[in-house]
Amino acid sequence: MIIDLLSRLPVETSWSFLVCDRPSDVEAADAAGLPGDTFLGGNLRGFVLPLLAIG
Image (tube, rainbow, N blue to C red; front, side, top):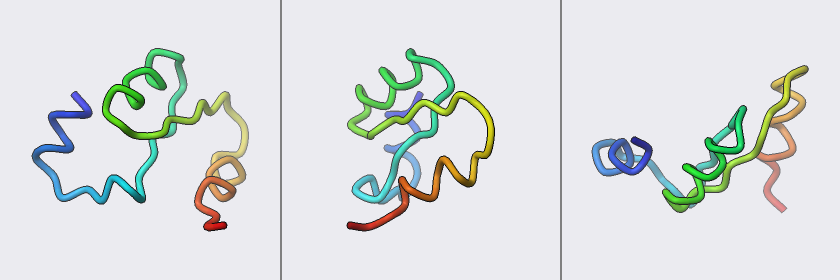
């Protein structure tokens, strides 16, 4: 499904990642060539902000 969406939408994959809630979601992100990070709950903003940091 991710690969299909990437082929249909103008997504800049070099700037993209997936926020996942299951190991299978991380595997799907990996199969699509995107990083996937597991969010287990809590403060989503606090989880995502470090992922957006450009270093």
